[in-house]
Image (tube, rainbow over all chains, first blue to last red; front, side):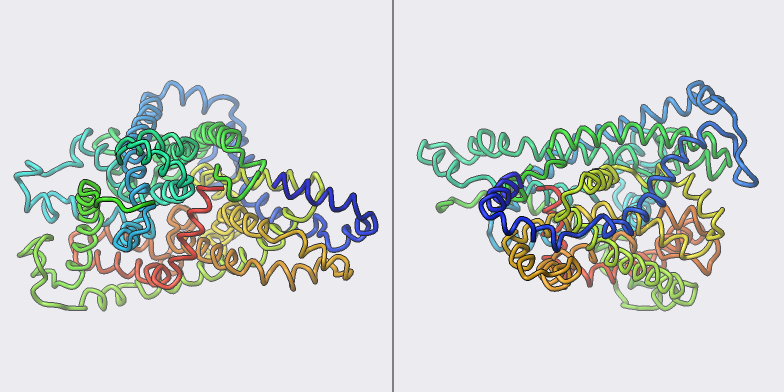
Length: 311
Length: 273
């Protein structure tokens, strides 16, 4: 972008007559107003409201009452809440650890132009198209100890009730998350791997480097920036995992998989403690915003330097 | 790259992943075309013996027709809103030189990171106060708002690729913003427009959280909510449940079949820009 801007500036300077006419045909802010107003009303205002509501007590009927720091002090004394933060982090980190190597390998593999790879990639993509609800319902059914696969594969699943123990339930959540979202990250890596200059590989081949060495010494280093973006997206996605928990585990067994996003839903819409729900939501927003600011900084998104340069 | 020997390890890995992705999808479809008795007798991993569409017919009679229609309404309205407000927004971001526009663009970029989960409580408050609770409009508005950042990002990227010379040529002719928009920007960003249409449609079709929190009666239920309720109420009717899952997927898969390139290229751009 910088180059086009400077080029335009140079052109404008050289031909002053055109500079005046350049103002013609430039849209004013009014053009952006509908989208901005709409977005402010339904995303920014609620975001401000969530902060306000976190200092109130409201049961969903009538009007919220100011309650000071009540929700916050209660929140930090609540063992389920503190545990939910830890569980959110755990599930997120496990998700990153499982999905990153998988999607790098699949993405680099899919970047090849072979026909069979194109066909398989098209199939690999399907889970991403499905709603998290459909995916969760599908896996819940598949893993059902009585009617699902475990009843037919006792040698693999033992007594079969994976969702009945904490480690099993967490494993299932991480696995189902990876099943659905690996295609997205694969796609990001595929795009990035295709953008690596072929010259690098040709040079390496001349030097006698094999596929494995090329992968570790050219591909991986070249994908560094993409890795950062992809991981940050995984973190934001992981911290806000909700549908899968609601359908697969209901936060159970007990509160063993009650992660923060799910706990917020429970507090607000099951216990009708909307103040506490808002406080948890705000906590999530703060974490997500910090991470997004990091994304914007690291990736140079806000500068929009170029559309082909990559990250 | 020059000729390489085939990579057997990668080939093996790709087959394993095909099984991981494909096996559940196979069970899904196979179970949905079996009777409950057959499924109960043979379990999920066997081949279906008698093909039947009974489960699909049953699903429609238990309300999925209605849920399907509601989801279509929500999706069409969300796409319409997105297609009306995003193109002028992106056009402004690309062409306007004001500081305000830069600020607006940053606002939308930050919006990418606002998780819908974070605002459901105030959204419930706002929508209830506006009298839109349990009304499809109350689902449509927030769903559309939350697909704006991604769509704005994608379309702005596309519009940036229009060369400045073309704008200048039209400016010399004294064309108004509206004429430039209609005769130059819209025709040249047709690909981007279909990408954001597909994106927002996918998001609306698969949306779960807003309908979950903002509707309650059967007449406003969307298909994802229908699946969720089906599981909690008749979880034991597995072929029926899985047929409903397939029903919810069919339109999306059709779109994928016909607009795969648009969708994939668009998503790839998100990571690469």
